[in-house]
Every structure is written in C-alpha cells, then in structure tokens.
Length: 156
Image (cartoon, rainbow, N blue to C red; front, side, top):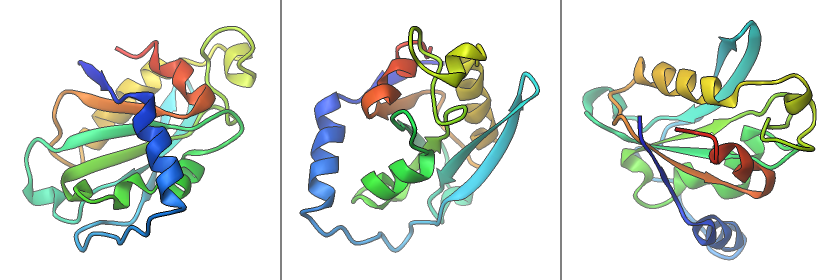
C-alpha cells in the first residue's frame, strides 16, 4: 500500500479559503457516516464521506485528513469541508479520530503515546473497511493539520 502526501500549503490554503470563499456542495456529495473499528481491543472511529455514486464507480481516490491534538475528525470535516470541494464527487474523504483526541507519534503526544496506540494498524484497517463499501485505489492521499502531521510520517 503506497501513500502520497499533499503539501502542507494545500491544507493551509484550504483552511484560509474556507472562511473567505463560499463553496457549494456538489450535487453528488454524500453525508458523512461514522464507522468504528476494533484495533487491539480498542474502539477507534472515523467519518467517511463517500460520493453518492460510489457503488457504481471503480478505483475511487481516497483522502485521509488528520486532525490536530484535542480535535476530532468531525472538527476537521467542519473546518476544511474537503468533501464539499469542487472535484470531490469522485473522492472518498476519511476523517479519522485520534485516540482520546491524540495521535501516537513519539515524544509528548498525550494518551495515544502513553497507551502505545498503533496508528498504522488503524490506518490500514480503515483503508480495508472503506474498501468493503466502495471500490478504492490501493493508494491514499494524506493531509493533516498541526499535530495531525506526526502520525503521517509513520504511515506506509
């Protein structure tokens, strides 16, 4: 499984632009659906926005959007609205939730680090789970904000 990274300036431009530019929701955009997984006996969740026509499409692109510390996937969905951007009608957008709103990414990362949470296993399980609901490409695009950048370094 390969990953591709969006430059940080892309997410910053989007965050700045959200308050300035009005973006209308594409007619084919779907509402977010919360999904839960069990990773090493720990309940993990994420929100996924599938295009309405996802069932009839093949090899859809996926974008994972990682939130900063103390935020949630829903916060990132509301703040960035990447699932509503033009061109998102053929994009699956995933907003994962960190463990207790934190990511395990080394020194000083809160409860996720102290609990030795496996973010890589969570990412891989989320990819497989989304793959059960839609035909996806074997690669994913990743973007993040603030502390959400740290787990991205560890993803395959």
